[in-house]
Image 1: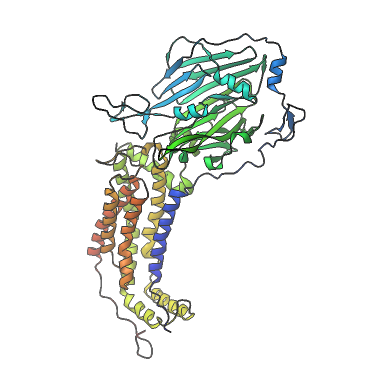
Image 2: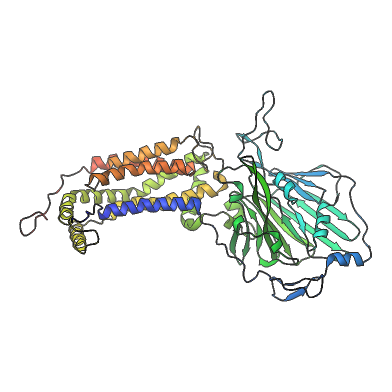
Length: 612
């Protein structure tokens, strides 16, 4: 029975493997994107034990590992005399704090944050327009103008989710649930009668029911960092408390992927960042009274472009924060049906009294976060090719100083990179010409061995003869693929830079491209990209002589275009590949003119006079 013919030359195998590797990298980056490692805290997760006495649970200290007995707060409150005056407001009211960066609303009901809008950033929604009325955003605000763009200001608080779960940002976390509910539901007195404050400003919220006394002090300046000091006393004695961000976080209007899929809680310990997406989080009942993880540098919650971080006060030693992280559930409408969706929550505490934090709430701007103490730039996730993505991103930022549009900055960056890679393209082209010259000779060898099966040992002799020809002609089979291989890490690094940096979010380019970090809504760029890649392949000499191989190489650009249509890759990446392909057309035209193809060599003959 005749054997199977191996139609794949070594150089074609390399090319196909390279393209498949690129496809795997892009698909993996999309669906299994590299994130900081998730390490369940086995060592420092406090373990509950049986109560030492009824009503007095025992827990292991998160920092020392020693056990401690927690007194029952409710019982203590009932037994002790009421020595604290009652402090409460008569009605609910909201105070607004403004600066050039944000608009924050705090209710005196629990001293909880009801809205945290970032003035320089819009969400993904389009203002609703009704006949005879001005366009409105989903929160009732009118669209705002920032620079040349108009849109709905981003609110990092999710009011509907908070209403369902009963949790709002800056809620207190106490060991006793009844005391916690009382503290988060009381009507606090506010230190100022004004309804609006302009930063720099201070606001103090105070409440007491005669046993439990809570004071929250906020200091706002002209940065994204707010100082918060919280004092909680029971019958005049300080008790353990934490401060939490509850009810959801981030841009609620993103469509692909769903908002909750981009939100993670995180902490930093010993300089190492650990993230917990909602799939890794447990429910709140897993955290018993007094259970906190210690030794953290900072803790918080983030989505793709924005972050909230509880930071220690200035001058505090690293590793002094404690944290809890869990998930709650609320219902969303999916095809008119109530569907449960997780809500990640995070809380922070420390052993200090009163409890003091610096709280960062703002964009994940790499350079600004790097200047923080402790540095927070690790929140900008460039993935495992950070050594490529980081210089590409900062190269783009440098170009953007002189070119005000990010899209044209990508175009110029592409031109510069292609100029740097052009010597390698010339070298690869010369290798291709050599391989094309010996292609008939190699085909003759392959035809001579085609009667053998693929796994037959005789094929090793065929490969040996082919490599002998390459050696005789000074050909490196990989040489023609090197320029393309070098493009793959650039593509992936640029993909990570476009997808994960705040600067490229909602960055317009040309006409219909209004967001370089999102896909092309009309698929024009992928089509042009596929066409230009096809033209480059058409102009480039082929070393393959088999018609099926030639057809496969022509189909590959179509496959690339299809990937960009099916998977929402950033349009900025399509701009890079399209520009690179257009430059490649010009470079290939130049090479074809200056290095014309020579006539193919004749197949060599063996000792017996037959073609070898």
